[in-house]
Image 1 (cartoon, rainbow, N blue to C red):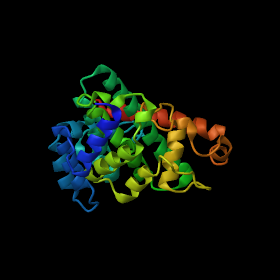
Image 2 (tube, helix red, strand yellow; image 1 turned 90 degrees about the vertical axis):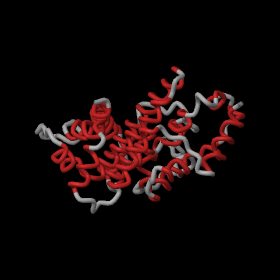
Image 3 (cartoon, rainbow, N blue to C red; image 1 turned 60 degrees about the horizontal axis):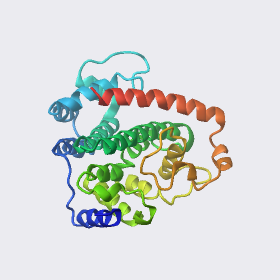
Image 4 (cartoon, rainbow, N blue to C red; image 1 turned 120 degrees about the vertical axis):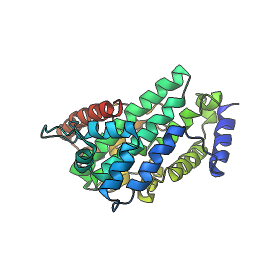
Length: 278
């Protein structure tokens, strides 16, 4: 089966709602669904997190990371950790676990390497998006972080099916199927319950144009992808082909700011990776 046939087959299955997720993903999805409601009592959130030992350990680790513990005060329990990171970031952490779990089913070493590169791209984009939201576009940084974490979820899903469909990663550009990929990404985001605001921004990444001035979630993701030091192994078009010229980007993020954002994002990415490896 070549790339054309593989994309078409998976897209057809996705449209029918026939998406194959690792069993471990379903538990994280249950936590995500509950945390989507900001009125969920904290005792219920604690119960849900404690029911998933990996999530509990990673929540405490994230709360103690440099990303959320600027003062250096260590927390040692889930209640204090949830209070520190907040529901939005706990929701994002559950989403990150979902994304990471897609790679757990991959057997082929080359595909696993692509999944790891895709994760490093994802975590850098997520951390940059949070900082760009805070300092440039002035949208909700928590929303930007979450959007960055899930912006390549369709690609993660495709990689998770590559063992079943060897032609899926065929490098032949004539077999590239952007329409099928968009369908797959849309259906995976729907299955994961990604909010409409976020899914619209992610769908706009392929052909989106940077706003002047940049002020939307899409603008935030475009800039984060542009500055991310790690490229997606499945990127099309490549990160360097941002629809705007360097001079337009420089109007809003000069060299000094870019260096500062990259330095802070690298530290946050290191913290997030460490928390997710607990």
